[in-house]
Length: 327
Image 1 (cartoon, rainbow, N blue to C red):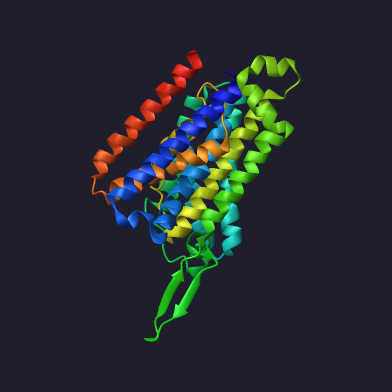
Image 2 (spheres, helix red, strand yellow; image 1 turned 180 degrees about the vertical axis):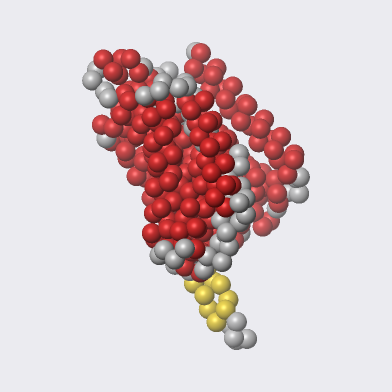
């Protein structure tokens, strides 16, 4: 079986799991297939998908990024503080994105120039970014950000509202949330980058065999740095979108999100050994996690039991990936 066939097999296995979960939870609860619940699941999945897309690019190069949850929090509070200080919302969001990209660049430089193991480099960034976020906010949430700050996270396209006979608005169709549209655009853009550009092929080459890629003329350091900058940038974007949804900036937000991102990538067929992975698979993996959580919530399963189940799913998926790699 070729690597492409293995990738397709893993992706369709994830898709099969997604369909199976959907069928099971639709039988458990009649409300599972409602439009409102579908939009809720899609919104919950967006954060995992944004981070998972970045994690996929990093893992393809043979690395790992444990800092995205902390970068998310730092970027979000920086954007909120900028808006609170009087900056226009787009400028505040841009500040958050730049902070995320800067943190990603530091990660990349630690891995490429200082030759630190990616696990250690990003673990250090996780602690630093979380500490800075807590320090600059005194560990307090930032509120009172206004309706314009909430537009990105709570707005929607094609929302249909009808005024009823009682004079109150009646939502006919909730519309497609902006975060979901952004997820689709990002997934398509990065998928095209990986599959149809020279840079994308270089990412796979570095993950498959870094030394062979270097001897072939690939700028291994530059490609690796790009992957970490992209991961940091997407973490910054996730922070801005998430804080916009909450209309409050929480310095403690994003705890354990990095594990969801890595799990989504691995469930979707990205190999932790590097050189194998796809964005479409990662999005499917994100929906597997999102639907699993949503269905367990609707089924009345406690949050503690949910952690156990999702942890077992991650262990099983990584074990399958390792078995595939050994073969």
